[in-house]
Image 1 (cartoon, one colour):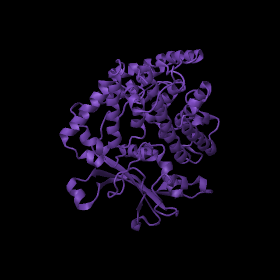
Image 2 (tube, one colour):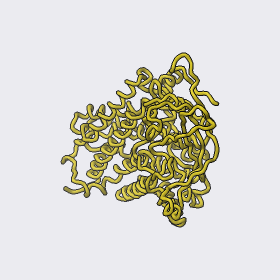
Image 3 (cartoon, rainbow, N blue to C red):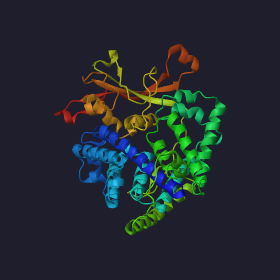
Image 4 (tube, rainbow, N blue to C red):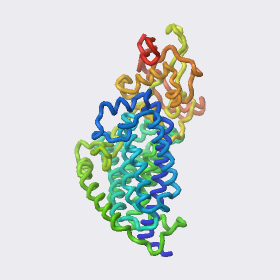
Length: 485
């Protein structure tokens, strides 16, 4: 078979849709495991309270009508099942309207979670998944040609993701301009990975090369996405390589994986000769009703793109912002400023009554740094939402985070669902009498310290984040509230 541009587009669509379905699958598995303790009826930020205060028109979601634990977990499981079906190609063997409906299901479900997810879902990769997922609805099944308009809109999305991230850095921290940010970033990023220690200890000159390559990928290559093939494909390939570098250097949930997925439709001409795939011959065009839907989509995205496009050239660029409640066209960007010193909130409890002689035990988290001897873990593309927000809590007083006090209260209650978010229970099911939070400064060990101690981190106490608190017993356990000593 002769590999034409149309063949490349077909292969690019095929691979992209499988990659997107895989990301959806991970996202819904995260929800299955975490939605009840984070957003459930007794969760840290209950959905029921949120929908009681925010009208549907501002944050449309199925959970305005159904917000019970059963509804949240059930919808997440539906998302898992449908995503798995899409991953194995169910939409390609179904009639076109049914295939579109299948892709619409995870978009509706995930948008519903994001729109009531509050701080737990306030990340750029959430809106990126919503936006990419909506465009996927219109790509059509495998037995028709991919709509060129939708392929262009996917490039427009990738363009905004990369250029937005590049511009926010260029306008932000001076270390991006003098090429020194990566002397700090690998150590102070939210969740370092198993290779982050090695990346941190690369020579300073190589760190400068990393930053310069990042600028090239995010400030130059996006404009080549709209060049003729194979130039666009090569540009997308180089973007995917830089995103792969980020996958190796840290845990950024599915942000990098999804960005790589967005590169795949552009890379179709390069992928086609490598994969044992081929479109039907001849490849028919989409039916008229589908073409009308695509042109309506173009009009809607074009209109909604005005504000995100203006944001790209604005002096005060906003990152990770949605301009419409359906999150159809958004702005992106991260790490405009870099933290130079890593602080961690260390949460501890004790079963002793007397604080003067209390023995404190530390709560270990699944991903965030804790025990200096524990090597940073690989968790991405899985997303540990509590661990991520603990990083933000260390940047500002914990009492300003609306979820932190409920988190401490849940530990004092011995809440099993919340304890399931942690890496074990230091009290083996027994309720602690007191819980406190301290701030400690972390840094990677030097090569010499690593050889001498085997540790990955060195930490030292900085101060209190939350003084010791205990539950104030009242008429019923549900009325218990933490109080300070």
